[in-house]
Every structure is written in structure tokens, then in C-alpha cells.
Image 1 (cartoon, rainbow, N blue to C red):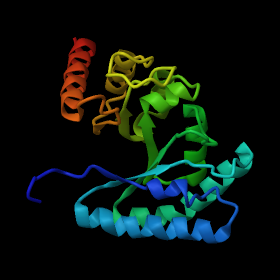
Image 2 (image 1 turned 135 degrees about the vertical axis):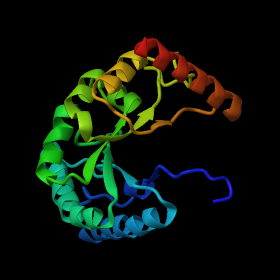
Image 3 (image 1 turned 180 degrees about the horizontal axis):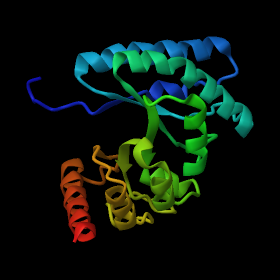
Image 4 (image 1 turned 45 degrees about the vertical axis):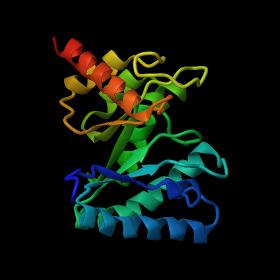
Length: 212
């Protein structure tokens, strides 16, 4: 409140430990309890979105892990709808869902307007899909966006120095009328503040370029 800094979303990093794809029903129950508790936290902080990473800790077969996620999120969606909070699923390393087509399929199974995608430029690229194509597939199902530009060799770098087509991604977001936040998920490099300033300048320049 003192800083007047809005909280756009809350990330449930706990889903790397307690996952809806877990084979242990107790862990899945704990994951659901954490998600429901976070609905209240979001309301208290004024955040409207929960980032939930699509983890698969036991490397279950793709179809089995995807079904577990679809079933558990479907069961959780009414609580999110009632609270006025959105659940945004993010593709991460090991996710059973990678492409925009696969994300659309699981969102279709869930069947709730309160559940969508937390789209990550870098994760999508590094996991073998095409972010520009996926943005155009997901369209208004994208709730929030992570902006990052990793290199294939995984060496830390500034925006514009990686292997993501940032201009193409931004143009695609403009084309689908995306108006949500662009959230940096970038390495601090040698100086976190300097890195943030540099990345913000790069992002601003790219937005001007694609809007021209």
C-alpha cells in the first residue's frame, strides 16, 4: 500500500512440490487447498490472476498427466469463478502440455472462462513450440504474459540477445488485441536495476517498432 504498487498475479511455485499430476492423492489434495487459499490471498492483495505451472514431477505419460490436470482444474474452476479470480496455466519444463494447440485442448476440457494461459515467450521457444503461432492460436485465452528471451545455450542475456522472435511475439499480441500485463522474467545479470532499465528500454523500442 505504501508503494502503491499493484500486484498483477501470484505465482504458485509450490506446484513444483504439490502438483495436480502427482500420483499421491494427498499431494493433489494439498495442491488444491493451496490453490483455494490463494484465491483469498488474491482478493486481499487486489490481484486477479493466479499463475499455476503445469508441472509433472513424476514424469507421468502425457495423456495421464494431462487428464489429471484437466480434472483437477475443472473441479477448482467454480471456486475461482465465484471469487472473481482467474487461473492462468503456464507451460514449464516437463509440462505434459507444450503447444498452443495442446493448451487449447486442456482449456476446452476444463471449460471455464476463469481458466486460461499464462503465456511465456521463452518457455514456449525453448520447449520446441513456436510462440508466434501459439499466441495466434490461444488469442483471448492468454491472461498474462512472461517476457523473456533465453538463448539456446542457456547463457544469461538481456532482452534482444536471445533466440526468441520478440518483435514477432509483440506483433502477434497486438494483432489479437492483448491488453494485459507484460511481466519480465529475466536474469538480473551483474546489476539487477541496470538490467531492468535496459530490458525495459529494449521492450519499449520493440513495441514502438511493431506499432509503426
